Image (cartoon, rainbow, N blue to C red; front, side):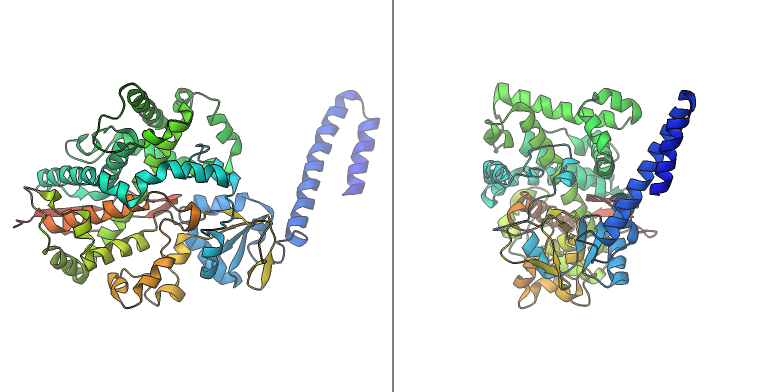
Length: 512
């Protein structure tokens, strides 16, 4: 290759100017090929991660993991590759490893000394300095301190009346539709959870549950879908990500009409903040903006939108998975309905069943936990950087993982591990949470991640899933349609379900 390059340079020197330009272009292309070839050799043979097994293409190109991810559900592909290469530390990029040793989760996502977030991954969400995307540990701690009062257990009790109110609206609409329609509860749950978080974040409702007369469709859901479909592209195409910060949204909307709904959502958030700044909080519950007064205007909007998107689809997909599994197993369904007969959730006063009372029903709590386990609302990688100042080397499969390496584990790995959950790890089994010693399983329940960077909204999610399950299973006979086929799952960072979602048949029950 060196002699070829030298020959090209000699030709450039001897050639007329008209031909010289063409030869220079050829030389430039040849140089790029040589550089790429040398980099490939380096990554595969001499890079510090060259000792770790994995697909050869992954070792030399970060584009490999994008292609796998873009297929829809990369966790299953990675699971097969871990088996193929017989390793718990699979190389999935030039400087990245995917880990399946369940005992390493609490090391990577530690409470006291968590591995730092991988900036390149989280920058793709295009909401810098939110509690989710903030890379700097000190800044994250301060932002979380501001938000903790709202998402604490005490904060959720203040939010609880809103959950009851939205659940009652949902029930009333289902009653109107039950005789003529199957109800797509996936979209219904998305509308409900978005409405709850919207009230909490913006002190305002978009009335999504009633937006359509005969369905649970909403322009907000279209906006969420557009955001979700863009995440992996923003990971891979950094130029496009940077363009989003420069090109006006209405211009981007010409390329993708659904982006118009994203713009509409951002404008909604902006108008809510402006209304709050002029009129204050006119609701009877806390509002996220209250504790963010010290932040710049744009940061307030970003934080509220981030909370909205993160808190809506994740809880909705957990409810969807839970209902699908419960209704697929008549014994579990009957047992849950029997347990809920002890609670009076009537049409006249559905909010009579307070969260604290519902949490005293062991089988309901078990179904909630099992729903969160099998749902895996954020199923995939959460990349971190192996720090320089570890007290002892980070070792997997007997190999030291060098500081500076990107490592990640997934909820999918943790929640399907037979080492943790036993041979029925992939089955929906609420009884596992009622066995002696079940409390110890909670350390492996990673629905909201773990440690200092775990999801701030977990208490809200638990409350929503508990209350909605109680309302619907207590007040309706529910069944899957005869021709039901489970929807396809897609990992778009959050778990998404293909159309038609989860269509269910409802029949109202008389409650005492």
